[in-house]
Length: 419
Image 1 (cartoon, rainbow, N blue to C red):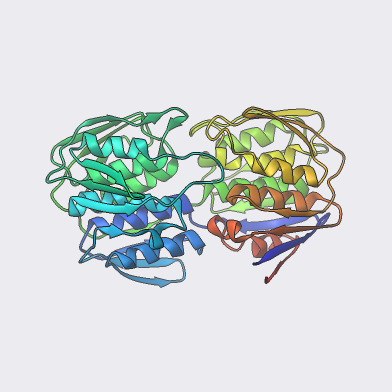
Image 2: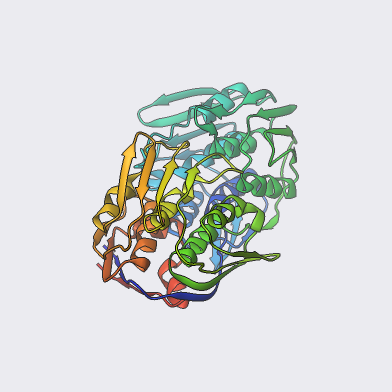
């Protein structure tokens, strides 16, 4: 099992390009199942999660070709069953339910299992499918949906902790081939939802309102092939900006949509870091000690839950007491115990972390528990004195394209050790 070793204390400088968005690429790749014609998707990041999605598409009968960051999919014939052995490694595999239901009018997809950051049910996905006229059964670990015909409906997808991104994606993909008009109320507003809607519209769908709380989908009989480039990964961009804040001289993140990371740059500005924003690049510079911060995670356009762990790493050495409240996944604090092993002073009070900034962190052996927690540990290792050893880095490979290599380009002393 691979490990990452970080020799801390080396300043970062220079520029780095952001890869395509994982959370856009996965549903867009799933959406290629909706057409018999070839689809070409550019900017697909080289990640274990995208590899798994391509395996799922191939298992379902699609012809898949990959050349660097471009993927070609032709789903002339499609099976409607995705068993556990195929989907177990990735929770986002549930996003094939919507396109399979829309195309085949039935689907059987194994539940991929739990998630270490807390309960992430798909109840709202299934409620949406039922509203479109599908019968839904969950038995033997499989989700089975069946509909002789899908009919447009008004569906509210707002859940206990806000709108569901994958649920919005899934219902939108099913509804594009339904009879009549579907209205999704309480829709997720994330840029990745907009990116999927743009791809579906290129395929001939009729979707309006993506990026707002109300999405309107007029069903069409069939979809054709399309070509599309995935948007830049806003979480990767945010992670590199925090890396620049933690130990940068001056770091520029290129190929980024500044509006997509507005909440992150606003938070870093409040911490005292000068931010320079251009059309598709953002630069961050040091400015003495980072200030403490009060931070609350919220659905987009609020501060993203996927950046909470990285900010905890930054705030662990900020001046004063910071308070971070996790409103999306209240149990998403597995990184706290590992950061404390490095000398961070953090206390959990329910869904809130109280962080007393310390003068320095010390390198230690730490264990990644999930994707964003692993990124936080790497960032802390860049700041810490001595050597930090991060194990279970397969979590990092799920969502960051060659993270260690990119940080090396900025001057980090970081290496991957084969296990």
